[in-house]
Image (cartoon, rainbow, N blue to C red; front, side, top):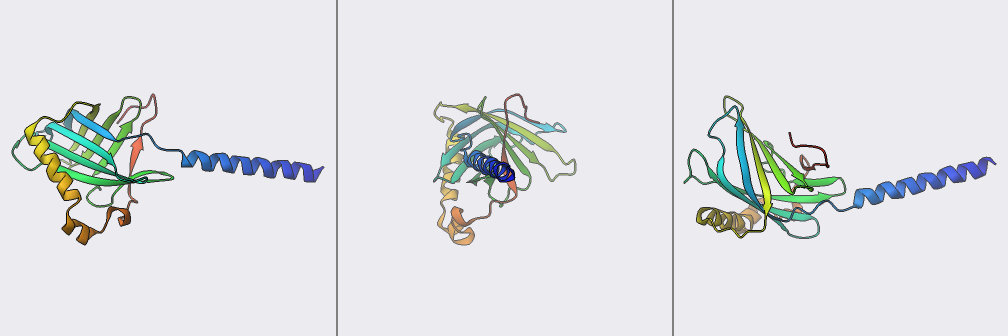
Amino acid sequence: MTSFFSLKGAAAAVAFSLCFHASAQTSLPDLAGDYNLASSTTVPASTWGYSKGRISIKQLDDKHLLILFACEWKREPKAVCGDHYFAQQRDDGLYLQDMNTDALRLYFDPASRKLTLISRGYDAKQSVRHDIFSATSAPLTDAALLRRMKREQSNASDKENLRVFGPYQKRDYQNNRIEFQHQGVTTP
């Protein structure tokens, strides 16, 4: 009788393990697409925000994404404003590259297809900026944002960056995970 129960327990443990492993392997929500800036606010209130912005997320391969970001500053519209990031999907989530992402948190709500970027400033007030982007299928027509988006695409594939930092497949993705919001949970 004890061997029957131990076999039953072992079978249950194996089944649980397989289910757990399968759930860890499930694909994450699809982030690929374009997003327009819906709002940009800072605490405490300041002009350290965006008057307009666009994010474009592209799937590079089965594990990597390229996030292109073009923006316009409220306080200085003609200043350079944009960035690009690589992200890597692993069994336990989606991680941003470990370069220049320490002060950035990114949240994605699959239900509403909204991205929220929370940036911590290094100013004396220790400002925090909340930028919310909504999914869009409209083509990018703003000349300044289009030019800045092209610049970030060029920077992402720049030969000198590749030489200095290595290919995106070999970079570190450890410290900053993109958080996926569940239904009923709101972004901070």
